[in-house]
Image 1 (cartoon, rainbow, N blue to C red):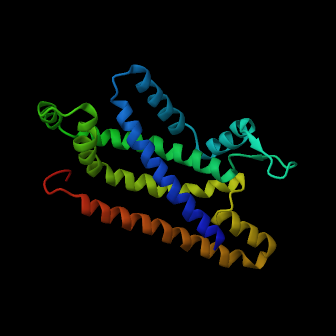
Image 2 (cartoon, rainbow, N blue to C red):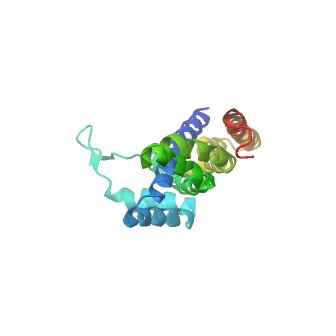
Length: 218
């Protein structure tokens, strides 16, 4: 149960951070600065073209060695970013790269005439994006976003490799100590992820129905 709780926490935090990254990144893709657009493009290519498993190892072992440490008792040095922290950072950036592209596609689906009408009314570029373009783009993006967030929840199992005590890690620990528990633990593991993913799918589908505008976005 502690592993299940950790998986839920990891999933929720990573979903929230990846959504923030997606919204900000999609907004930056339309920036006037070529440097800013290039940074976003480089970020997307890096995280889309490398496996999330390798990214976890890179963040934890390669970047982790440069993480500052502190010593609460004067003896033991503890990194300020734990293995759970690195898992959140890595998985959020991984899913966020796909969210940027999902939101970008949604933004491009908003008619140019809508944006031009907002400009004629005196809206600033930021106001147009925040009050008009993004709310409409979100409605178009929800189906693809649903798939990516489901994939993110399933990808949290890879945090096992850096000893994050999530559901898979705790299950393996139990059946290593009690070999006879392999069958019930695998059964529990299967249905636990089925339930977690089901909650995400049902929630996203309900959100999509709530956000639907008749005659817009299908």
